[in-house]
Image (cartoon, rainbow, N blue to C red):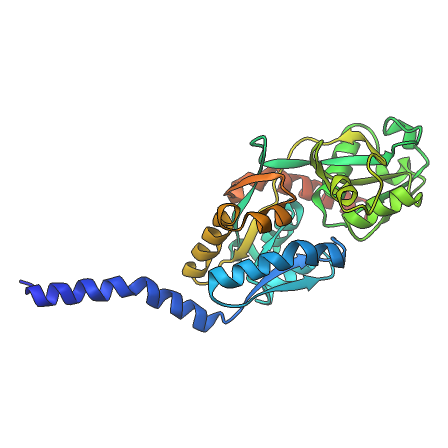
Length: 303
């Protein structure tokens, strides 16, 4: 039978366990690296992410640092090499990551917009003053995808265009990868392309809207002529081999940001996200099917 002294001693020891667990993960993870692809221009990424790094450093108790990679696929390689702890993965990059890493890549949470929508759309933009009103009008014209591993900037528009009888390889006069969504929209407005594939959450939030709000393009300089089915929102992901206490603390910090650091929340989300919701692997099975279909099409063309 436990004595009162032994019971009190046991309670005191158990009360210290959470603190000890936190100290343990900090010893094994002295800094937290947040992966971000250079699909967003350098200045834009720093403007959005640096306040978040400052916030997370305070909440986690270790330095949080940006880890830049050259393209979307670089995020997968960074996870494989244990070079980043967390990153937001586009759905197609998540599909690629699961193929390469399996359960070692773990989805955590995803955006919910102000209307309760847990996703976004691929859109095809043209210049607002152009005569183009449909995909058919872009036949023989110049077209830019964002990145071969982009969901909204390549996978979904390619897949669903073909479903509508439009083969991008033969329909457009020339197709290129611009290197990122910002690059595509900026080049469109400058007249370098006739149409581009990018993303939009709703009429108020998307790449073009963000660039216009930063005065990088004129307001109303682009127009949507095609919209995809809903794409599940990009999951924030982590390495499965990280301490559970760190993952829990990161998720809690991100969920608390809206109330505890509203200015940072607004900067990071552009003011268009209401909250985060849990993300599950099963949420992305349809995206994985689209990626597998595209891979099959590539293989067929090579053969």
